[in-house]
Image (cartoon, rainbow, N blue to C red; front, side, top):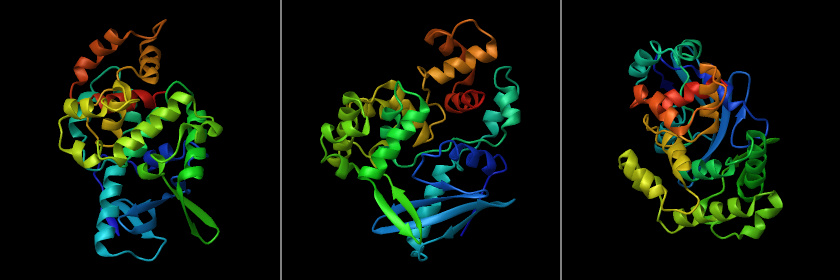
Amino acid sequence: MFIETPAEFSFPLSLEFLKRSPRELLHKTTETGVIKALRIQDFVVVFEVTSNDAGLNIRFLTNEPPLQVQKAVAEYIREWFDLETDLKPFYALALKDKLLRNAATKYYGYRIVGQPDLFESLVWAVLGQQINLGFAYTLKQRFVQTFGERIAIGDDEYFLFPSPQAVALITPDQLVPLQFSSQKSRYTIAIAEAFADGTLSKEKLKALPLEEAKQELMKVKGIGNWTANYALMKTFHHPDAFPLEDAGLHNAIRNLKELKEKPTVNEVKKIFKKYKGWEAYATLYLWKTL
């Protein structure tokens, strides 16, 4: 299977992002591509994504699935690498901007590597709150190994993220041995329960404008403004999703502007006025400078 990609897309930069932790279980990277397991309805498929000059090549490691499943995998990959977003207007802005120009030039074609699974996106955001990235990946690894599904192909194992239905049935006490804090344990289960009982779903939020979708997300215990914006950025690819409170974003601005201290929230808001409509991508490229 083949997926054509826009000119403003760099698979090597996406692959670099996907290689950022050896503890990641939900995909495996190689020198030239990435391998991932995915459940589509009743089918579990394992596929490899590599690239050439024109786009992405998809190879199935499991038996070749029905056409409708192949189409769903292609749609997942388009979401995963944000291939539907037209970045020309962003680059027109960024390449003229003092703060973004160098990063936009150096990392041209870098896109938001998303998390099309909304449940995974929200849980990952909760796991990463107030801890370093390395430990967040350790928590995710333990969570996936304990409650996720394993698929064996030869000597290799591939994992699926735990389903909300499975996580909704566990208790906080079962997460504490994985070194989840009591708060992270409660929030993870509360989010799972919201999906399991139908309060939350990707389908419900997909058609909503950004602010309405954010308000719906924030009705669930454990989902605050930062977590909601992160999910809207990573799952729905809202270009105007804005994780305003993000510490990494503030550090990037401090470094680039050579400030003695991190900027205040109001100072960040002021800086981002010129990026209106492209806040998510401005954030992405500022993160990249770190």
